[in-house]
Image (spheres, rainbow, N blue to C red):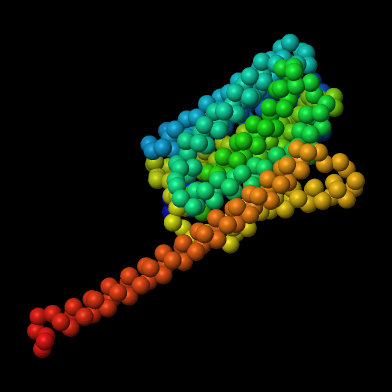
Length: 356
């Protein structure tokens, strides 16, 4: 009964998050009440969403007593940093009534949240472990991260890299956002690969939120570099969705300090073997389309494509080794059971009262 209530409560929370994001996007997109009213709504609702995510992470921290407690503590600190950054951004726009400069003090909060989020994921129990499966999960994380880096480089980072003066602080800050997002996605994928199915829900919600944030960051970087970004903008809905998804992740975490179930001994499913290849196929398809259209693919992009091929081959080799080892373990376990059964039957016949 409690499980059903928790599931209904979680679905209701997810529905509220989706509805809130939709209402935010509709208000900003339709410019309800005029530009001034929309600007105030945007710069108040965005830090409020970040604050909700921070409070949700703190509540999740209070429900745990194991290693997961540190994970939620660090993630709450990252959310606090994002909240502070959003408040500073709003101060520029609402109190000072000026365009937010690049870089600004808000960037300290935005970029400061990245190492905190990475530290949280490193501290998650699912990223611990050893052996072939651990190595395969690392390569799967590298596969996804490299694919996202290739896509980001092709669409945003490459043009930005060549057009930005990286000797200035503003240039470094502009490039830091997409790179930081790729690092975070790598570690969240690594954590998901180390969890069993039922325990992955908070991490899946977290991945959805961080992916939305990565897309928003990359789009913002592109629009800023092309002097096309205006505030308020529809892109801001991506950050609201990210903060609320993180809040949903915290709300869906297990209560009462329930142990984290790592997928160390579970047999790899077909979906788990195929899923990490999907972003690789997307990245390679983008490369093929660019070549077909006659676009120039730079040396850095070719190096990423080569790295993807090497990572795929290495990862598939580790998967084969893992499956073979799993097969040997299953065979040895079956032989042990048959031997025990045979010895048990023999002991039964040769026990007290036997004619022998």
